[in-house]
Amino acid sequence: MRSTTIRSFIVIASVLIAAIISLQVHWLNKTYSYEENEFNVSVVKSIRGIYEDMQLVSEPGNRLNSLIEHPDRNTFLFQVDTIPPKDSLLHYLRNEFDDFKIYTACKLALYDNVKHQFRYEEFLTGAVSDEPEGTHIDLPLRERSFPYICLYFPDRDTYIMHQMKSWILTSALLLLLLVGFAASLYYFFKQKFLVEIQKDFINNVTHEFSTPLSVIELSVEGLEKPGMSTQPEKYGKYVSSIKYQLDYLKSHISNLINTVVAGHYQMRFNQTRVAPNELLRRAALQLDPLLRKKSGEIQLDLESGGQFIVADEENLYLALFNIISNAIKYADHPVVQIRSFRRDDRYVISIRDNGIGIEPSEQQKIFRKFYRSQKGNVHSTKGLGLGLYFTKKVIDGHHGAIIVKSTPGAGTEFSIELPVNDN
Image 1 (cartoon, rainbow, N blue to C red):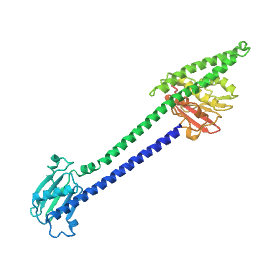
Image 2: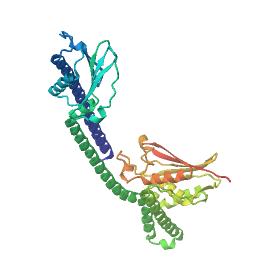
Image 3: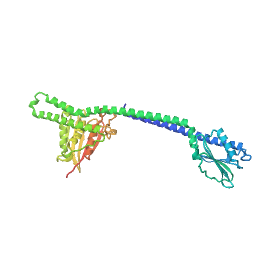
């Protein structure tokens, strides 16, 4: 499964999970509003029943609604003309609460408008309420020009949530299922990613070592040609190529292991005085068998002053070798132009090829660890692309910069800038 497909699947799954959770939250909110309204209606009906059971006002008629106040979410006030006996009021109130299934605690108080204080207070326990906390509630004194009865429900929210327990349990179960589904997806894609990393690492080893092995193979073929023993210059050239490529393989195996296995690996550089032009000539020489096989050429236009810089010779050589070998690989008949020159306090190395080029959207991604192009071209068929990742790590470690310019179908230019220390 391609990474784009995986990303699309994850995005769609995330959107669906978010939509389900949002819908569930919406319905919980709607249910809470419904239960809250039902509770308020039941309290009002209970108050109406009190008016019917007791002569609290004269000729209430159709004005009962105007006698009932709802100053805050937990409080109801209803006007009375006479002060009812406490025991009778409590008796009828309990009956009304039972009739309309109000099973939460209630603090009752009767306000005396003459004395501007509560005449009496009482706490009624509920089936889903705790008495100890409610008995010590101090009700705010709301002054009115008439006596009134105050009903305060301290556990109203808890009671409403209790009425919604089936909804809450269902939502919690759904949330657990969604979390389990998300965890399963994460585990599945993590395992798939690890399998792909293992597979791609094997491909990458093949990719990284194909060039030196090809050079060794061509050099061996050259040594097997008849009469090679009578041409000491060519014989020595082939032997030198084999030796260099074997050294390259040994060094690069160590670098690849450190780069891939050690996530926090910090490269250590053994810095000495290095002539960059000599490294470029050496890389061109080592790649000559592969170049001749593809009927290509390397054009050297190197700075003539013999400039030295302070660098790690072996790692810098491997970084340059990677770029030049890629320039040869990704062209049918490669023409590689290598220039070097000094610009102020920087030493610049330019490597230009006539290969297949790199898409603009890929140019800043090719240096990422494990990055693979999704374009389906040659760049995407060879493992993880650790070669350029390693190259950039070396250049960054030397406080330098690497810049890529490419035109698809026309070629690519890599410019490497390294600091010059004249001291």
